[in-house]
Image (tube, rainbow, N blue to C red):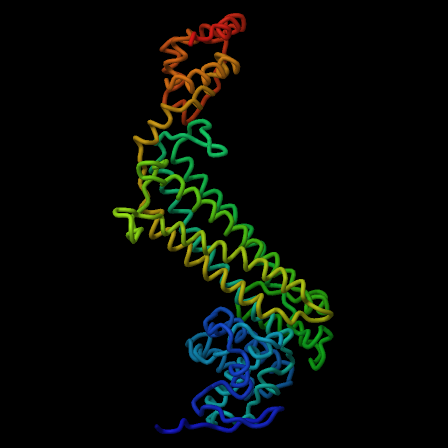
Length: 492
């Protein structure tokens, strides 16, 4: 076996051999050796990598403008950044585990090394010629991990949220389409798992859509908090080792590089130690997960059966459900989405605890906040698409079961309240429960209303879209008559 060609690189701790063809360097090598935790790498979070590289590009432009990096080197750094941002190169050159100590220093140095070696390539030099383009002195000029890393993180999460919003809108559209399809399917509404009053199946699906739709502005409003950055703060927020005017200049360039409404934090000391925006952002993600899980619970319940459950809807059959029970099919898609939501809710606690664990001028737990945020967004995006494509678009209504449940329900007596009175309604309901007869039969037997009035009040249209009925317009609705009727319980 031919030995791998290497180059020698040096750092504070000594020298190491780095693969000759690697764009990363010795700092990245040590990080890959130290953090072998999850096998999930920073490179798996493309939005994060792009955010970090955008920071490096904006910084190079600012340093060139202010004269702190020569035009030739700054231009080479900008070219290198565009190789990643535009051409998609070197996305496989970020091998560091997402779980890491060091407050993100490993990610920052990984980015510095990749950009430096790409710049060297552009200038015609071999990788590792850091005497020409240096990861620290040039690519990281006027920066610290403590402002570059959180800024890149914020940009990445902001863009990931935009992707989440698009997938959420697609699911909402699918639910609205089902709402329209099922608009005339009469079914029983339920509270506390007990019969309540009728509704349409379409209105239930429209409510699902609205439940999710109101999360979009919350996601967008909270993601906007991420566009306030501490770039220019360097180590703790004092702006150490930055030239005059750098803070305003680099933020201006970052706006141009990203096309986003990035603003500089008012107080860099506060912004460098604060992770509150992540807490708010993930709380909005958690809220979406809670609602999405609730919808999946409802879909599972409404499809339960198929013979001994509610069976009001039929979910698409996706796979055999049992190794022992023949012909059993389970609601596997809502189930897996439920589990994704549980994970996201758990990640929210991780973000909360990591944010609380910050000390003094820096929160070193930010890497796990990043991991949790990107994981939650990625999982939810897959879950939203899976639920839409493999479940919602194929849902069918079991209209006959829905109608039969309504007609057999005692709950429809509520529609007669304004005409026969609440107490008479209690008597009707009690008799229905005792005898097994339906509301219509008992009301007629008790002489509370005639058939024509019942036909009007219990029509499918009125059950789905109830209109107020003035009791005075119906025979037998005079208070004295209703009181007499209330005393006339059927003999048992």
